[in-house]
Image (cartoon, rainbow, N blue to C red; front, side, top):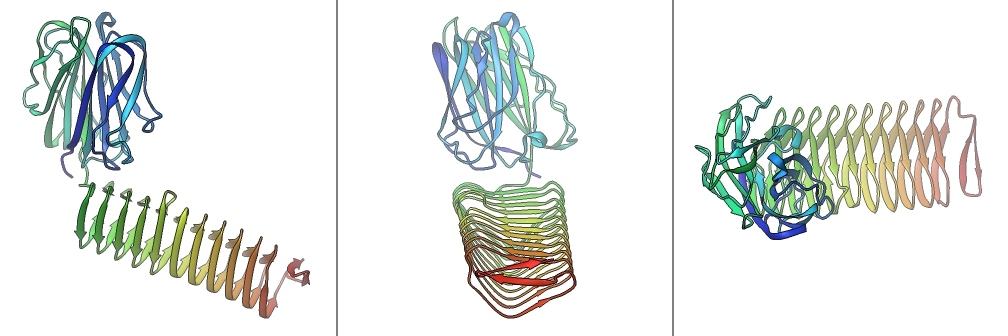
Length: 464
């Protein structure tokens, strides 16, 4: 674990009364960072936050001061990487002045639920705003704590809480009708609850004070960079974010338990081997080229290639077991040598997709669905149990051997071309080939409940 870092910040103010307030976001923001905005208002208007310009923000503080003379608001979100240099348009029910501060934070736990702790704000009237105690269930962890105060009357900060020496900030919108805002941070390793202590402002006035605690996480690989890693192992709730304009080369990547690996943005990621286990998650999104030597997914793990952007995914071997799923969606090209599915595993290839499979084996209730404008070339296709292979849409399916047993089914529908060297159907299995298609079959075998097949107008239908 590592202490979170403030990677960039911005600020601004409205120095005359208005109902529309512009918030300036940090100039540089990378996907996966924590974005926080704190904002003070002169008076206590109803604040309507901008959840349209740069996604939805979570509310953590929206507290008026004594006599409704001021208000402090704290909002946060996990960045998607598009917010850098952007602005928000905040509306208030009454015409007021305002001051704000925005920060982007990296090397944090990665989720608002597990990585951000903001207790209820404190209020008072004095020259010493006192942020509240921040307790958390994290125990002793690496953390960044930010003390914040917002006050009436455009007061400025003359002293910050003891030991809060990082990123000290003080601004005021001006005049007796204005408001003031101050903040400062502290980094600590292996500590628990935090009680920052008091600010000192230029004169006694009404105030609202808050404490924001950010939990540390595994260092992310973000921004414009080149990163070479021989092997990367994630355990428990570990998180690695590879985002921005980057070229990370990973010899081997293993994620376990609830760990996550996010590869996002415009990047090229060659991975020697990728293994998510248990509930681990690997997301490969954006404009990307991802080359994986071997991919193994077990239990309820998920590997997502897409659904956003254009990408190419080359996989040497794909093995999916348990309830694991590997969706390949969007504008994508996927090359898989052998593909094995078991249990409730599923492979879905959707959108404008090309999938080349040397051999496909499906057992249990596993399923493969290839839909949309799709080309599917399969050397050998074997289905057993309740497994289903659905090849639908405008596609070309070339199958040397097709074997469906027990309750398995292989429907090939819509406009397609199907070349089958041999077709074997047993038990209660079904093979439906419909639509406009061309078929070549050297051998057709039927067993058990399959009593006859009727071939009419280029269609093959099972009669039971």
